[in-house]
Length: 384
Image 1: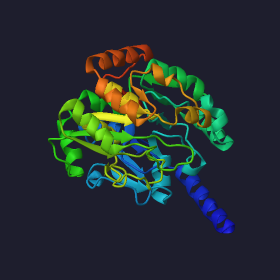
Image 2 (image 1 turned 90 degrees about the horizontal axis):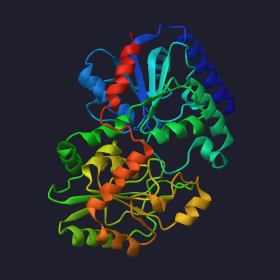
Image 3 (image 1 turned 90 degrees about the vertical axis):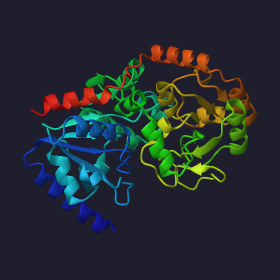
Image 4 (image 1 turned 45 degrees about the vertical axis):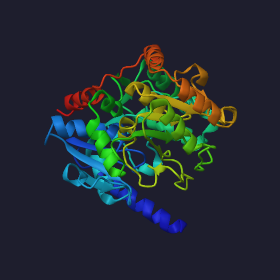
């Protein structure tokens, strides 16, 4: 097996060197998100903006792993190639722009060319969990070295707020250009979303006259799928008593978690792998999470969010550490179901929105619904 791997690597290296000597196409953009698994996050919203406002100007190439969840009509809008194929290597080394939302490394087989432009969108406007250099003691040394090399490649890094800019400068070992104009994946929250709600509800065959609460826990280092004692029936009862409306509880797992969750009694939005978390948030009336950055997305959307954190002390001790004291955030933090039910009962929308506004002002949010437009304007200026 080792011999076969060496032969395969040698073959790929030969092809890479060949493709690196082919002309770079100034209008070609290659994109991927979430390790080639989905059509989503900021690369998707950059793509959608280009398709709407710059039709036929750019050659858009999306990369997926075999078996990925690809929208049925995407091939009509962009060209699709598969990771590790010869087509992937060719498109990667002849595109002017490379756009993704996670680190690149040795597994990507990309030797950046001097005239290529690498745009790193990252995958959050703001985050609770410490990242990269700020969590260096909890990450493998191989990842750290690859991350440092990746930062040297980046030409443009997107930032959703002033605090994120400060974090990126320090935690990413990054001294290059940062575009402080928001996060394309959050543009959706500044648009009318009834059609998105209808799309999501139709996808899961949910009645439109009900409200949707999304439970979206983040991953742990053990990658086990756990609901941490969440009582979904009690949650549903608390929401219905508070609002007088009918509710559906749905569970969405982090992409890094194996999909063997215990989600009996709730609608699972993980097993069917709906590709766009942002659309799920836009369609939801309420979010319950723990340490996920989607809490800040819901703040930007102006929707209620509750934190269910029964393992708070253990999480801080075992995982990466946090950028905020979780109790200082506008989202009610609950250590058990009793506290969660009480937080829902006492929830006041006016006070919550005031506290969310204070948070967004404190972090210096750049989100205004125009992030994709700003990125594409940059791309357009560099494609000439």
